[in-house]
Length: 215
Image (cartoon, rainbow, N blue to C red; front, top):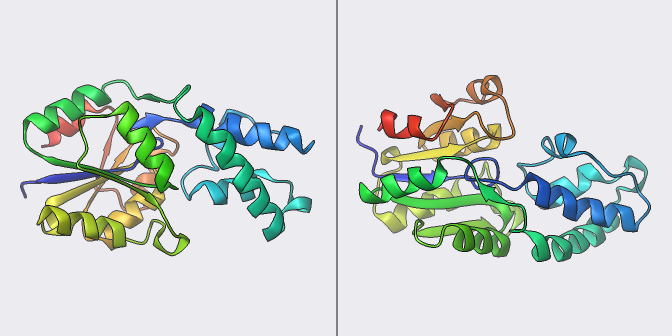
């Protein structure tokens, strides 16, 4: 199969955004006199959207839907201010994207991060690489729901089997499977190779160059 398009997850795949996300949430927790968390702990909170991360970060005794909603709004307010402060592409990612563009492979971002922030990070850090960047606009369309991925394939006029879905989490692998795309995991993100394989990854990359070799 000759792959003609690649859909990338954002956090943990293209960029290491762990510190900015963690810092924003810890600002909110500190303001409420709640316990904060380490970067290592936040690593396991990332992947299912920022609202879910807020729920996991709050104390179990202060985790009502009302509290989650209030803290989510505060977290987004803080994160919007710093979302590209420490966030950087992983080593080799920009060279990978340049190579893929030179091959005329279509490229997109699909993230469970809020759509506004997904677009902001993708366009500021990768201004020349992606045809489209899609984030979370409604909870019902959150990965592993394949709807947005399939919509991207339609915009490209490609069959889903011609597209690689590349990410660092079980959620990404399940999204790929649900969309009938080729699931490729990356080991440099927030989950282990074993978790990715168990979730359906056909290939797990240890560095970006391995994707070029695979193609």
